[in-house]
Image (cartoon, rainbow, N blue to C red):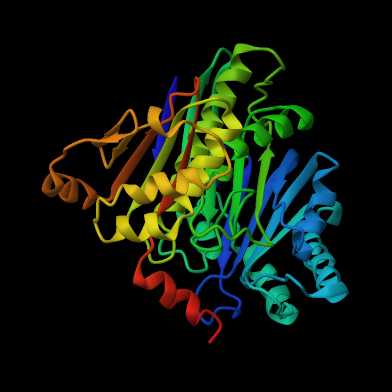
Length: 402
C-alpha cells in the first residue's frame, strides 16, 4: 500500500506537475539561498503556521493567500527571516510575490512566500529579485534536491521524503522537504516544510487533513522549547493524475495515513538534526488520563535541559525524567508509574529497580534513545521527538549573528 523513500533526492518534484530550483543569490555568500517551486497549473493549497504572537511578515502574508485555497508557486529565501521588520518587511513580501509572478507568468495572488534566517534584518531585495530570475530559469523536475538545500540555515543536511500510495484509482505520490534544527518547539518551530502531491483534492479537505497531520508530527518536535516567528508548512495538490480523493472514502484515509508517515519522518529528521545534536530522542508517555495530559508531560520531559544533557553524556540519571514529569502540571500518582530509560527498565510501580548500569550506558551511546513513561492513569499516550543538548548547541547559538 505504501512505498516510502526516506532521504529521496528530488522528493519535492517526485509528484507529477511540479518543477523546482534552488540557487544562490548572495544572501548567504556562495550557498543556495533561494528556493522556487512552480506547479504546471493552479493547485489546491493548505497551510499551517506558527502560533507565536510575533509573526514574521511572510507568515502573515501567506496566511492570507492560503485562505483562498489556491496557489501555484512558493518562493522561499534563507539567511534573513524578514521578522520584526515592520511595514517595510510586509512590502517586501508583496515584492517577492510580484517578482515571482512576473518571472513565472502567473498571478501574484497564487504565490506563497516564506523566509528563514536571522530576525530583525531587512531583506536585500536587489539580490532576491535577481535570485528569483535565476531560479525561474533553473526550474526543473530534477530541481527538488537543490530546493531542499536552498532552505537550510544551521541544518547539517537536507531533509527529503517521498511516498507512493496505491489507491483504488491508481498511484498517488506525495513528496516533502523540511528545514529546521534550532528554535524548535511545538506549535511549530523555526521550521519550514513544503509538501506536494499529484492527487486531486478539495482545498477544504486538504486543509483539514494537513492540520491533523501537523498536530501529530511537526507539533510533536522540540529541540529547545523556543517557538519561532517563521514556522510554516505549505502543501500543494496539483491534481494532474485526475485521481480525486473524496471525503469519507478509503482512498482519502490511505492518503492521510501516507501523509502522516511522510511528515513523521520529516519531523524525526528535524529532531535528529537539532543544533549540536548527537542523538534523536523519542519520548513516549503512556497510560495517561487524557491525550492532552500525555502530550504536556512528554513535552516537559523533552524540553528539560537536565534530561537532554544526561542523554548527551550517556548518563542513565532517570530521576531527571520523573522530576520533569512531575512539574508538568498534570496530576498522576507517582506510585503507579513505570519508567524505561533507553530500553532499560528502571522504575516499576513508582519504585526503583536494580538494573545493569554499564549496559544502560552502552544503550545510551546509540544514535536513537527512547524513553517510555507509563503513568497507570488511563489509556492515552503521546510521543514527542527531541534531541540531546550538547556543547555545540551553546556554541552555535552564542555566535549566531556574529
